[in-house]
Image (cartoon, rainbow, N blue to C red; front, top):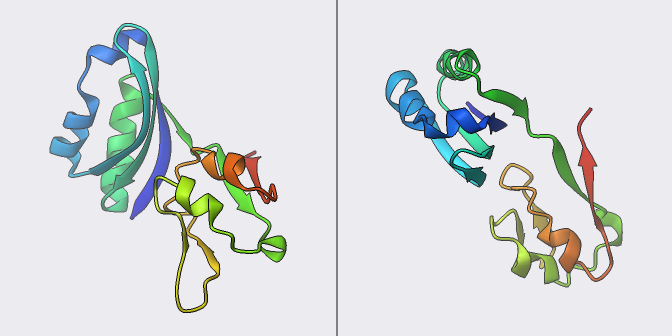
Amino acid sequence: MEKKVVLSFSPELTFRSFMNDIIRDYNININIIKADIEIAKGGRLLVTLGGEEDEIAAAEKFLTDNGVVINPMGSTIKLDRDRCIACGACTSACPSGALTIGAPDWTLNFNPDKCIICKLCVKSCPMKLFSVEFAE
């Protein structure tokens, strides 16, 4: 199982090694997708937690018990496929490989599971076909 979440740290928590703890103690695979943390200032991590469902739940409990705020990823990227002309401008801007184009059909492929919500596709699309939708 994989789960994308945003971990928010208070300034006091930036000195703790939470990622090491959940890897070691809960057998969790972590992919840090985006990080904005400064020691003694706090911050946020967008991560994918991988492992068995019960191990992920135990790791999340450990984090919340220690003051880390966990939120599901708060937004998604939407593409208006009906108007897309597959120019490829967005694929060259996508650092995660969520957007690809290639033979044999040369159509744009979007894999939302790889998307890190960097919003570079929104900026790079000449037809303005990408939008950011926020979760409830």
